[in-house]
Length: 275
Ligand code: NDP
Image (cartoon, rainbow, N blue to C red; front, side, top):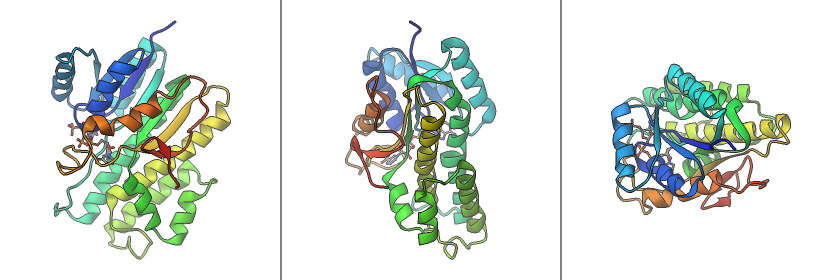
C-alpha cells in the first residue's frame, strides 16, 4: 500500500504547528509542515524533531500561485495525491491597526478567502478516495453572517449558491469597502469576519460538489473553528493552548475510514454547529 500523506498550510507556528505535532503522533503516514518562508519552516521542523517527531517540509505560500502549483505537482508525483489537507493559513489585522478599512478588506480577503480557494482549486483534484479536507475557519464567520443584511444571509445560506456567485459576493464586499459603501450594501465592519463567512460557505459548496461528482469516494470536507487560542494572531489572553486549538481540526482530519459525516458542516468543539 502506498504511503499516506497529510499537508497543513501555515504550519510554522500557532495552531497549524500544533496540528502538525498532533498528526505526527496520530496519523499513519507522512506529515508535511508547510510554510511560506523556508527558514521559519525548517526551524519549526527542527523544533518538532527535538520532541522526537518527524514532520517533512515543503515550501508553500498560498498567496503565490506558482508555489501552490509546484507543491501540488510534488504531492501528485511523490504520493499520487493527498490524503489529508488542512487549510489553516490565514491573516488578521490587529484591532488597533490603523490601516484603512479598504486595504484591510482587500488584503485579508486575498489570503483568507481567495488564496485558500486557490489551494482548494489545485488540491481538490488530488484528494484521494477516503481523503479528508479541513478548512480552518472561525466562529467569527458565523457571527458575521448573522450581522449581514437579510438578503446576504439568504444567499450565503442558500443550498443553490454556486462557487462563482460566492466569489462574486466576496469581490462585491471588497469593491464596496473601497468606496466606503459596504455598510449600506449590507456588510458588517469586519474584513476577517467576511473572509471566514466566505470560507465556511465555500466549504459547504465544495462538499456538495464532492457528494455529487465523487459520490463513491468517501471524501469528507468540513470547515471548523479551533476555539479562541493563544497565538500571535489572537494574543496571549485566549483560554486555549495551540495544542487544544488543534483538537477539532485534527478530529476532522482523522475521521475514521467509512465515516459518512460530518460533511459540508461547520464544526466547533467536535460538534456540528448551526449555520
Ligand atoms: P498565527 O498568526 O499564529 O499563524 C498563522 C500562520 O499562517 C503562520 O504560520 C503564517 O505564516 C501563516 N500564513 C499567513 N499567510 C500565509 C500565506 N500566504 N501562505 C502560507 N502561510 C501563511 O495564527 P493562528 O495559529 O492563530 O491561526 C491559525 C488559523 O486558525 C487561522 O486560519 C485563523 O484564522 C484560525 N483561527 C484562529 C483563532 C485563534 O484564536 N487563534 C480563532 C479562530 C480561528 P508566517 O509565520 O509566515 O506569517
